[in-house]
Amino acid sequence: MTAHTPRRLVALALLLAAPACADREAAPPQAAPPQPARADGVDALAAHVHRELAGSEVPGLSLYQLEGAWTTASGSSQELSALAGHPILLLLFYGSCETACPALVHDLERVAALLGPASEVRFALVTFDPERDTPERLAAYATARHLESPRWTLLHGAPDQVRELAAAVGVRYRAIGDGQFSHTMRILLLDRRGIPIEHWDGLTRAIEPIAQRASEAAADSH
Amino acid sequence: MSLAAGALLSVLLAAAPAAADGMVRVPGASYAPFYPAAGEPPRSVAPFWLDELPVTSDEFLSFVRAHERWRRSRAPRLFVDDAYLSSWAGDLELGADVRPGAPVTFVSWFAASAYCRAEGKRLPSEAEWELAANPPEANAAEQAEAERRILAFYARPRGELPRAGQTPPNAYGLRDLHGVQWEWIADWNASLALPDNRQDRDAENELFCGGAAAAASDPARYATFMRFAFRASLEATYALHHLGFRCARSEP
Image (tube, rainbow over all chains, first blue to last red; front, side, top):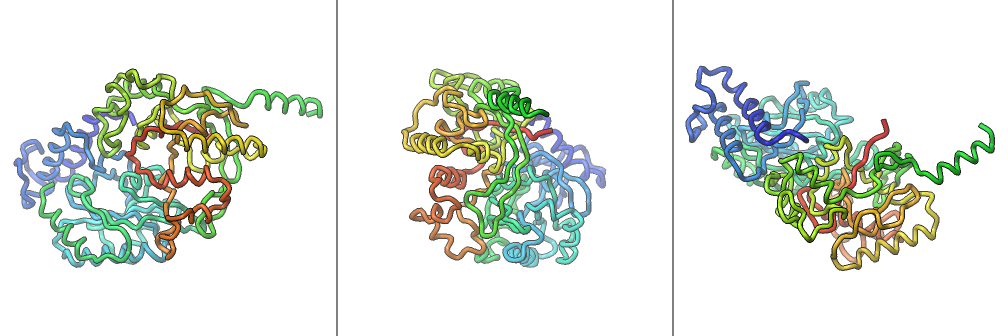
């Protein structure tokens, strides 16, 4: 890991700014208003996140510092930081799980329904079984469950990459044979900058507080 | 190959364990998890190379000199907690309390991983570390001695770390795997305090009164049990007094 922070931040800023600016005649991200209202769109937000990260002397807690490209269910390649700009509900799971994971994914679907279609909150499912959960399998999983892009992102990564993300968010998992895993059941909420701001463990908690907290995060410019 | 040549070869191999660049080759083997989940099968581990010694403070100092991002005052809090390199006098100064040749400690898993990557290496997996630390060919006396040393280490109050390489080499020629410090592994977060919080209704019982040790594959190996319990208690940003690391490399 030799990249230095400033370079990474520039890369992040470019990553954030490029797609958002493409469909706007707007000035470069630096010229965006200091307090981005959500109506100003993702580009202003991206610029804000950029300034926030770049200007900060305080070491960051953002997960978007994690390096490496992931593959989405549609087969395209993206860094984790491509999720920046939206509050994210994140779940590490595996597709062939028959007990906990379907229940957790179903919980997230219910949260999505509670939030409503206009919500800015997005959902990311990352498999810790990259061997079986190929991007094709993830695509089939998403289709079967009507998890539509861009609201839902399913990510496939290298084993080390998944291990690192799990380590960063306090998720433990262990292959226990026959394609099964022991694992932490944790749903995380990331703010727009990728900072984990809340998590919920287990299967027996209510989903309303998750939706509530996520919509608060969406109301926040961070 | 004649019988004599074969015998000579095995004598040579025994006398000089395969080593290069301070690394030692560990033969592949089957690894049976110490604390298996129900039905978890043994896994096969390919031959690999492991540092003979843990990474030392002066080696880690060279790393942070070259990688500004990993200096104490710069490292992002996603990757290290406040104790990171806290025994050092400064960003680039070990100070009087840290022996240059002693294993580096107060390093997080992220920092340890970054160091190994910068060396073109990686952290060993649990299976690799456990195989390296418990050579199957070790005889009962060696095993008992290792166990004794480990337990003495657990019992000792935290003190200054000795220089790396003071303990006798094990059957592979590796030193300091036991009795000096704990070491990070790549998949420490595969150690679950509870074997499976999804299907095990009695999981809580195993937190207490040595229940987990009783469920382990070899309850006699108390030291190993301690190691797994320790790993299960870690977080990736933890920087601890007696927690260091060494690096591994896959066989090309």
